[in-house]
Amino acid sequence: MMPKTTISVMKADVGSFPGHSRTHPKLLEKAARLLRDQEGNLLIDSFVTHCGDDIELIMTHTHGVDNEKVHKLAWDVFMECTAVAKSMKLYGAGQDMLADAFSGNVKGMGAGVAEMEFEERASDPVLVFMADKTQPGAWNFFLYKIFADPFNTAGLVIDPSLHKGFVFEVHDLIEKRMILFSCPEDLYRLLAYIGAPSRYVIKHVFRREGEIAASTSTQRLVLVAGRYIGKDDPVMIVRAHSGFPAVGEVLEPFCTPVLVAGWMRGSHNGPIMPVGVCDANCTRFDGPPRVTCLGFQLCNGELIGPADMFDDPAFDRVRGRCNELADMIRAHGPFEPHRLSPDEMEYTTLLAAEKELTSRWTPIPE
Image (cartoon, rainbow, N blue to C red; front, side, top):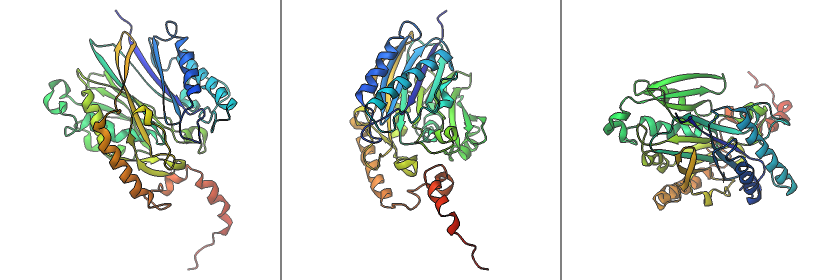
């Protein structure tokens, strides 16, 4: 019996240039070389890429999720890349590395992590999504459309293997609790929560039989560090076909321009733009937020690919609409809804500015 395959996607911002724009090629080369050294040993295969100013590590192995050795490898890669970034005085060098020493798992140490373990099928397409200048809840809209909306996913109507629906595991990032919603019967209950993506985040999606369909990173840096040091820039893994939505159904929701929290200083709502990796460089107002997608076929843990899924003129129109939406919302300047609501701004640098004015507030006369 073949061992189960685990795919682990880990990301971190360990330094960028200029400012928060993009990842330096030397960092990508360093990371790729360190992972290649472990292929045939700890890893089966690996691929290194970037989205904006984040390094993305895609690794396959047989050690299951939350494996200490795999997480230690990722930690070592990020720390080695941090050293390179510091040697070049790159901006924000090591900003996502929130500890001086590894302690068993990178999840609570600043890096974003999405992992899943499964038995490979006869053909196993896997899509890896990576975002920059936004928060983990940005995936909520897209996962709902992929796995619960028949107007997006035709297979929910015409493919009997999808008729039982899917189970959504939702995490409350503030209270640190979780709940399962079985759809379609819990559809409205699910939407009541995931429509507030700053707090409630879809962590996993499963088939009714328990087979994993999707996994996301849910780490929020401000909740780990206790202060604003940058946006979370989440990653996501989605399996496709043969009991799951087709590749085209997984990609279809990204044709809708969606506003997400993040952008400049992590303090603004803006459109998340699907782009090819070559265009995953955030410039205008440190954005707009970007999402990339690499597609692979898994073959005994080997990553066949990648295919750059958004490097396609089919997404030109949504990119144009995102730019129009960016023009519209940028015109609001420091006013909501471009700027985040007060409860969200508490997690940004505005809190320090407010402290300076504490003594100047006086009671309103009755």
